[in-house]
Image (tube, rainbow, N blue to C red; front, side, top):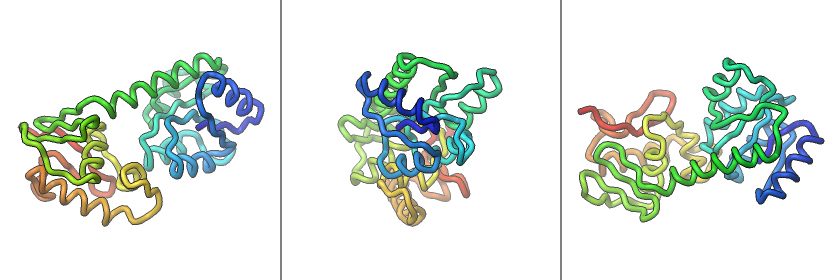
Length: 222
């Protein structure tokens, strides 16, 4: 997904990335790009921060509220402060304008490799192990009896240990429903998952709720 308001850059960069093996969809505004990400779940986003309808950093935060898609930010600012703000807002990488299609292609391939590795290798958090390849989760060496959605939810959180994930993001990524109805569905599945992990909401070990924000998967305190 390429979000770029300049028609010349949008056309030439989209064509160049297509020639390098990427299937590219373009958006001229931030809100158009945000809608596409929520509905179509692209593999990665290239985001121009200088958009006409919404500040690029604000759009980054909006994207992070609903999606974990890798984002490469394109910025004209190359000072450390601007780069740190961009990464803190949720970008996985950045390119400084002007940049070549070859550089962007290399950075895209790098973030896609990292994303693929995160969802293909077994993930270990404390005594909990989650293997996306075999769809098996175990705790203290004992296989957990999880439903499909329970496993998807656990795997999504295990791929982001220590990171607070919003219920809206869980609905968009785990249930493929970016709009509404998040709280009850997520809460019910978290309750079932807690029971199978041997914990409760009042006495959590792995699943820690952050009031008004979301939930995170953490290694239990010793």
